[in-house]
Image (cartoon, rainbow, N blue to C red; front, side):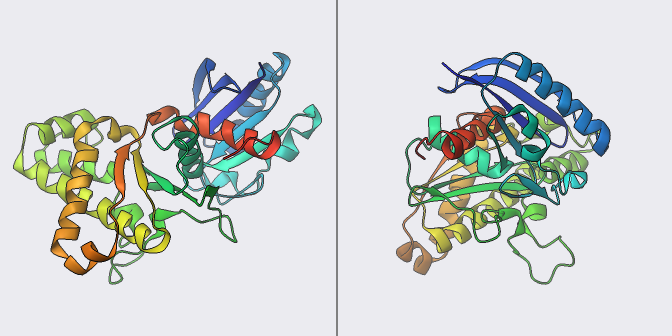
Amino acid sequence: MKNYLSIDIGGTNVKYAELDNAGQIIKKEKVNTIHDKEKFLAEIDQIVVKCVDKGVKGIAFCAPGKIAKTEIHFGGALPFLDGVDFAKRYKKYNLPIAVINDGKASVLAENWLGSLKDMKNCASITLGTGLGGGIIVNGKLLNGAHYQAGEVSFLNLDVNAKGFDGFSGTLGSAVGMISKINKALGNKDETDGLAAFKAINDGDETALKIFHEFCHIVAVVILNMQAVVDLDVIAIGGGISAQPIVVKGINEAYDKLLNDNPLVKNTFTRPEIVGTKFKNNANLYGALYNLLIHVNGEKL
């Protein structure tokens, strides 16, 4: 059994794990993300060296931003990653190296071993600061001509809003939703997700109103995706998806959209909307599967 290093680069933490090619995690660790390019890369160098010395057979990365082959462009929440090419940086180790966008990693993870297993037409949406997305059509990961397919945060839902305020990445922000609820309830910590969801689950009218508006936005995003790619199943991930009311609320919002629009309801086949299996570990699995697909000839 071959072991691989998988590294998930996030805005808050860098998670990394040693996995075998069956997707079993052997060891997993994380470090805080350093928001300084040179110090950040030095940290990644240490992780790579440590695992290469243990004999891993390949290195898989996932990161925010548009990723063309193995080079990161812009870097999303980590703009200092713009221009970083991990395959070139670690070429001296003579190991296969693959890099993928974090949203695309999530859908690969679920399609490999999770709630989208073996689906030919499916997608995942990760609810976080913005909306991460990955789409599989006819059994192939959808990259697009410029490697930016599936960037659902960039759907413009309000053409009259200024800047990025009218885009789904702002309107459908789970972080924003939690902040609004805590602010409305007078909670000191606007980032306290547990407090926000306690209010939602307890039926607080103020919290429910904000939560239902959030679910409506996500449902609109799914409907817009359906109009373009026509999927069977869409998996909802991200930290808040561990709350059962989230997938339930999005399903209810989607049904309301259809019931309020008979033409749409009679035209489009409704996709199944489910929760993801891997939650916060999805990117580690998806990055590895991307490596196996492109280097070892695994099938998607």
